[in-house]
Length: 107
Image 1 (tube, helix red, strand yellow):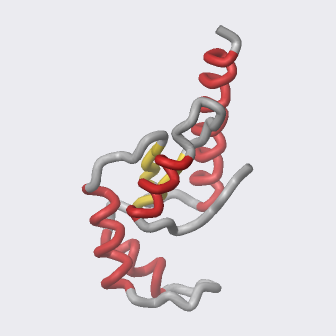
Image 2 (cartoon, helix red, strand yellow):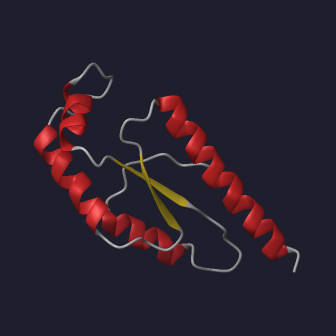
């Protein structure tokens, strides 16, 4: 299953707690941007979402970049990447995760 969402930090912690059983294998991929000006351009540029508060977006992004990783989380910096490049990186992370878990499962 794949879930795409903008989970708040407390929800990520809850998710990790609820899925901490051995029967669940999951991966969290968090997208971040290391350039505040680029993030501002993305928020204010043409987009489907109604969210336009670039100051809040920059604050949230900084907080995410600075906090520790949650269990099974991978932070992906998609600064200067096209959506296709980001998608390719996400797929590679998922492939690597699946390969690791399949080999662990068969041990």
